[in-house]
Image (cartoon, rainbow, N blue to C red; front, side):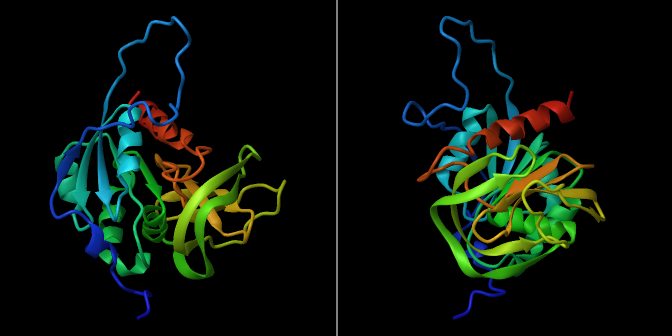
Length: 246
C-alpha cells in the first residue's frame, strides 16, 4: 500500500512518557575533547522534551552527552502537556512515512514555535516545515544510506551525512546555486532561512528561523551508523538554549 498520507509515526512511538539518562559512554567520539590537564567546570543541564516519532536511542544518548535531561513523550502529546513539563528545549525526532499523515503533531508544533528553543531532524524537520507553512512532497528517489553530501550554505562546508527518508520540505523558492545568497522566506512565525541543501539533488536539508529559536535538518546527526560530520548540531542546540535563556 502507498505510504502517502499514512500515519506511520503512531505505529512506532512510545506508549507513555519516560525519562532517558544514558549517554554514549566511551564507545562514541566525543563532541568536544577537553584540554589535557584542564580542570572541568560543572556543566549546566538542560530540561529537554523529545517528541518520539520513531526516535533512535543514539539520538537520546547524544542529547545526554551535551548536558540534556531528556523526557521522551509520545507523538500525540498535546502542546499543553509538553509545556506542563517546564522544558527549556524541544527536540523533534526522526520517524517513518509521510509528515502530512501526522496532523496532530503539526497542530502541537504551531503552539510551541516561539515558546522555547526547538531542534528537529528527519521527520521532525518535515513536520516543522509544515507547521511553519511550507509544503512537503515525496521524492522520486528517497535518500537512504550513510554517504549523502550536504552543503552548509552559511559556511560553504560539505558534510557527509546519514539519511533515511522518502519525503522532503519544499522551500517556496528554488535552492540557490553555490556562492549565491541563502533564500529567506516570510512565514506566520517570522523569517525562515534555507541553511543546507543536498549536493545530489538540490533538495532542502536544513533551515532555521531568524526570529525564533528554531532550526532543523533533514539528516541524522547522531550517526548510528554513519559519519560524525554533523554531531556538532547537538552542541548547536545547547548553544541556542544558552543564548535564549541568557
